[in-house]
Image (tube, helix red, strand yellow):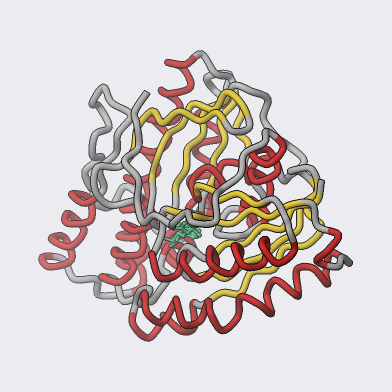
Length: 335
Ligand code: KG4
Ligand code: ZN
């Protein structure tokens, strides 16, 4: 079953064709980073306009790269939320019209569930059940995953997401947008023990996270100890990153142990972080837990992950009605 995926929840317009939820036939991602960079963050109105400009050509390219005509598709999956409403509406409305015109079965997809599905697009998919640590610019959550569409949230951030903290700290350090990747890069040469930043919620018996206090601690440190050279910048970046990695690693490993799971998936944009990948893999291994991480192309926002979960939902008979709407956020049930 060949499913077309469409993603437009934030600042990437993406389309992909995936066979049977596993084989990526094409994956096209049009990034808007250059448009938002001058503003040091995503400007929702500009994001919507750019999605509108490129969504049709991005879908055409995804079909062309898969070597397919639109009428040979078996289904369509599109991100419904959470995300920026205006941005979501562009992909969602396009998908509705496309599916209706072609008579295709279609389904609206939860963006966070799609990120988790990305782990099945590589050569190292985890067996069920597994725990998923979903770390992106908008979300930080732990899930208990017992089947392709069976995901129960175990905890989530109470304020800023991990990626958001990376981006805000990068902004404080004048490193530009998006900052996660830059912090990752400069932290390699820094001393992670130079500044003892707080590890929020590390010792609390909860799978929830909180990163806004850490962000404020970095701001206060910068006010009293402004970096004087690139060495200082690298040390602050490394110390901040280490605090985030300590908390994410400890909670994810604890969740696996609590659930009796031997497999852990690390997904979302922050899964590209080198230090997090290394630490999580090593700490989990020492507890007999194997970590599975999607290829870098499938960590950040993409449409292959949307098509992948769409396949399972469509195969299970799920359909979204044409009068369905997008959603910006959803209250996550903690199971
Ligand atoms: O999943 P994603 O592409 O979009 C959302 O759904 O939010 O995640 C984007 C986030 C941004 O905050 C970005 O700074 C962060 O992922 N990110 C990183 C790295 N690469 C991207 N954070 C830390 N280290 C990285 N290497
Ligand atoms: Zn995302």
